[in-house]
Length: 141
Image 1 (cartoon, helix red, strand yellow):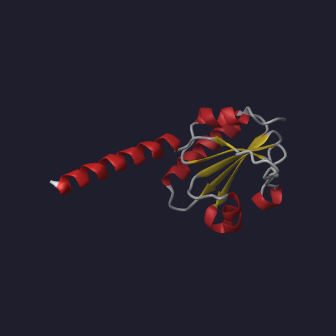
Image 2 (cartoon, rainbow, N blue to C red):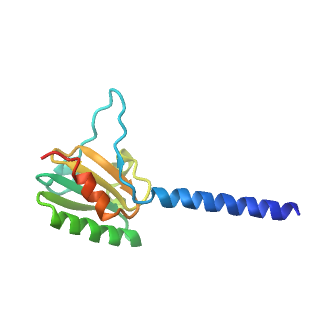
């Protein structure tokens, strides 16, 4: 009978963890404010592309990542809809120093930068288009 209790407990724990994972997947979080911490900025030299006039959507991807392809479509569509927004996709494996510096733990990870390259929002997983547009609303032109 103890085995049944262990199996049920493991199942409940797995379901709870899955629900937490699902609720956080693709959510665009604000950059954590730390007193005395300098705002993280990314420039054209680091990205290998020019920043957008209004904002830049930076996507870290990997070769065998299915959600990365869907994320690319969403971000390309948003960049096409909103004037002054650029989309830059970086291969995480080719940019390991930047991945470590920005604490990218999985792909796809998306950063929303303002016109000066300051990180405004970040999220992991497939983001919703409405969340990306809302994050762009926080950038200043």
